[in-house]
View 1: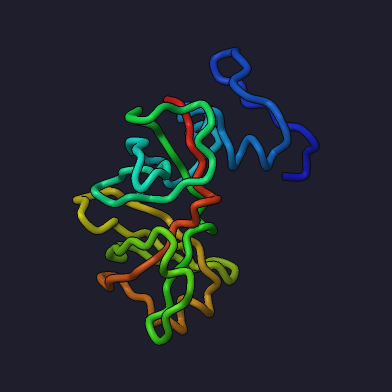
View 2 (view 1 turned 180 degrees about the vertical axis):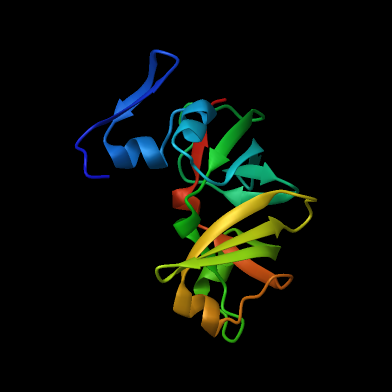
Length: 164
């Protein structure tokens, strides 16, 4: 993250180069995403709903901001950074609950240096795991525990679409 430029090379071929933030958070395809250890890689169909482009993912329609280079009806890969998934507070609802809300069941919690990584399975799927990072005090205040159901929002501007 201290570099000005970054280059991902796999089997002697340059896959992508650019600023670290671009390569790490906006990989060109799933191969690059896996090379730089991107989390939350999934597949969805690009559809039109109420004249807006959306991702149809496990029966849920997700608003998405950036769709250039993709066609309606196309199956695409997408990713979102763990820090861009927002936990809904149990005690008081927030405005964020209206942006791409989904539910899931916590499978694992790992806290390191003040950040709690939450691994959860997405509702209506058997085993699709998502990773979310929250400050440790947020995890404690919301009494997060393995087996608990949580609600989150997937920020539409943070969804990154990729080719395979």
